[in-house]
Length: 492
Image (cartoon, rainbow, N blue to C red; front, top):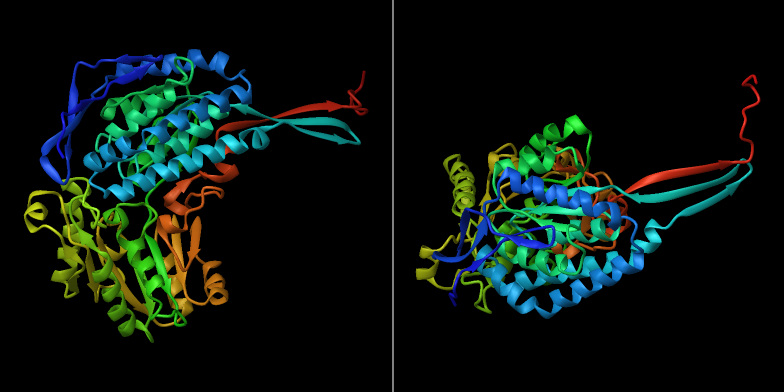
């Protein structure tokens, strides 16, 4: 369903800004089709956007909650009205199945509405009267926010930053990933149009844009979702001006299947398969390594393969029967395949899962058939590294202690999951080092925007979603009014 390529432009101080250079974005399912073009903005244009946000902040921070909420609700309605066309654009530029693209927008809207419903209550002044006098705890806006979002869930991982930041009285410059820049830019434009010029700005580009967004002294906070190695560079760039940070980074999320898990529970087994291969495995919070108790291991593998073969249908994102679309880019395919090849060379068994709907299309596009790896070593790269693609190792464990050790033996700690009888599963879950642990579900299936989300160890700093995700965009300001103004031990 190829259409004319769209052209995206930067938004600086409320106006579209045409860049001298543009970068094409191809359709991963049909790589010969150019879906659209995004600008390659310069350092100077990025400074203009930051300056516009800085100037807008002086007035925007003093607006009422009612004004901010009303503007955001109008933007929400516009996104709802345009969801079908935005979802189609996202599926074309990203490669994910259309149902998946619609689901991403639904989660984005859910969060934006939660933020609107709760911002005033979460950020209201707290008055404390006590023997010593009165104290007000105020929640002030921080200032200019630099937001950098990734390609795997570009809309939801941008709106997760935009909504609380603007509602809290901050201004923002957003930079999406060049690997999925189009649909998120359309959404950003819809939001920006409802706010005063400079409150929400949009730039695209390469390294020099990112460096400016993370080092410019007018930027007060960085909100970044992406890889851990990139985050290390961001932290160094931000060090000179001691910026606030929210970093949601990589994960190598473990799923532990206990000995009391019901391997004949078809729905549970399907949830596990989905938690491995939704969005072709390109989700930071997906289950990337599965540990199964040795007493049920063989039966589990049999039932898992049955569930996978039944659910997985790889093909065109716009085919209603397809559950797994294309991988976003060729480089990611090559990386995941290198992990699979390494395991195979070391003697692991590699099993293809599911069905390829259209062999010709499969060969033409950036597709990978979901792959199960059995017999890998606990220290093999496919187990220790975040593959971020449609391949998953399943390994046996001896007892709960062994499973907990394996799960925690990682530099990452974003999410995890434990599968089995609830009481037993919760007991194990409490000992897992992760920001979130889900019971008998995993990945997006277990996400709840009402509660905080983020990682431990090298999976990030801070939390998004929930009330904590709102508070992350506010400064705590204590105003003291003591009854006794003079200290008795200070001489006159």
